[in-house]
Image (tube, rainbow, N blue to C red; front, side, top):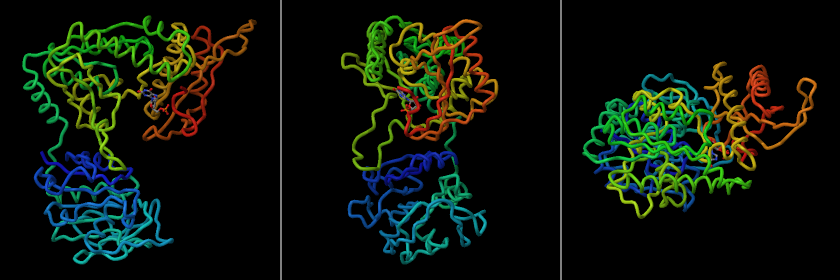
Length: 510
Ligand code: XMP
């Protein structure tokens, strides 16, 4: 399989670069700059290397540098932003810094005729984000693009197949960014594009079959996208040798537990074990109001129930989980030695011994996981499911979690979802849900005074959940949601809409 290395120098768009490469049907891996040598790059057969951007200046003695031998290793190289400056610096060019040299945002780019710019007009818009700039290209390099403030917006050494662009071709604001990457990958690196989801499914199914033989596989199914797609893939490979254990703690959205059960028992060949344990969870949560304490209790109880079941019935064979690529990527920033731990990667208790852990999605980005899920026939709602916190409604019922309060929230949330789906508004939202703040307010219904629960609606749009905007849902939709919740959900007499962005708010209320 053809592969491209995205060498991470700590930039914020590194995953985006890899995804853009994969969108062009070429497999891309991200590695921190200090975790792979030039010899490894050559021996592992990468078709090309992309140096990412990064927050540093090449003048800073602590900034990340790379072995200059890469320039003569015979592997095509594309530097982006900091990566471009680093190439210039390593190859003997001049990187400068001047107060008026910064460029941020959309900038007009003038290009010369070159294979890297095939099918791109002479003037177009690119996205810049830099302070330092290349004032003199290295010997042997030709300048192939410039902007008003940036004399070397792109440079190349065709004889060594080394290229650099000061702008960011990976972001959509660069009008022809996709074409530039395409030109690098296909014209310079000579890739043919052999990374496709169909072949991924066939190859992975074959590999799982070969690895598992006639043994069993057990997988913890949460009903989220990743574990669901992993389950569907493994089921395709080994059918009934797969057992999915679904711990339903009673803190999912209305009817969601049944939906998960029906999906996997009706559409897929596997053993499906559902453990209904709402009572046990609520018992543990009795009197607990602190959000972090609730999270800890729900997490601990979840794994206790799950591993007890495994010990009882499935403590041999293979263990599978829905780890995806972003869960495993090491960062090129600061201390790159630590691998990020993530809730998708579960530690197996020491007393349980599996032959091996199977992570069939470990090389995929989320959008690729979804594409696999669609191809495997998972329902659209499951494949495009919004993020849902592990502790579930436990952190959306503010304060103490009781069966009655979970019921009220589930009913209100189901109405919200129904209205957003009916209006076709749901796909525009990154996440939306109801919250039960635990506030009672006075109201009047008929001639009666009421003193009932308040429900809050939260809806956000975001690219990465690190920051988020509150969603500008049309008033008429909000009005219908409010009316229906008050009329249809017993014990609720008021609905409010949360208009807090993140920061300063968080997406969840707890
Ligand atoms: P916050 O509230 O931190 O949420 O702005 C950002 C994203 O993370 C989700 N979230 C969680 N997911 N366990 C999870 O698995 C949690 O404890 C948790 N808390 C928040 C939240 O739904 C949003 O998508």
